[in-house]
Image (cartoon, rainbow, N blue to C red; front, side, top):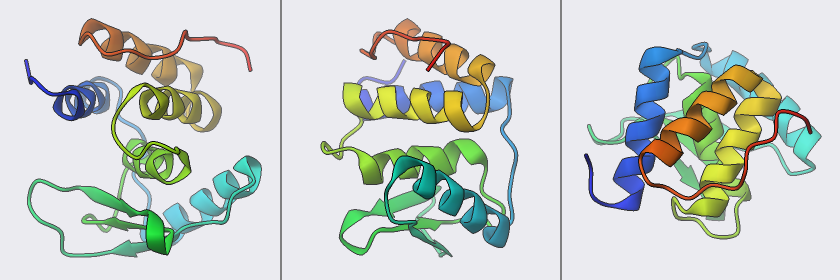
Length: 136
């Protein structure tokens, strides 16, 4: 099992994506989807770009520029929500606030089943996350 909080958070998300894949979207589709999410969350929509990133990075949130860079031409919804959570959280690391936000986004924009499973995977990895609620 990975040792640090970031690696364990990412490993839990990778496990979810293998077990219950989220949809892959083209860059234009993903941009439109992020715009809807931003409007619902009352934040500015991030600029989404496809970039050459290092092998260990699938995506990167750049708060100063309010943008998300992804390596793939068809990023999956979980990756996009992960990066969006980085943008909207006050604490930019992979801590409790971040994990809770990813679960919340999954619940609201993908499915309650995906959110419940990720919540469980985080907990099974010994990671703190706010209690899960199937209702909003």
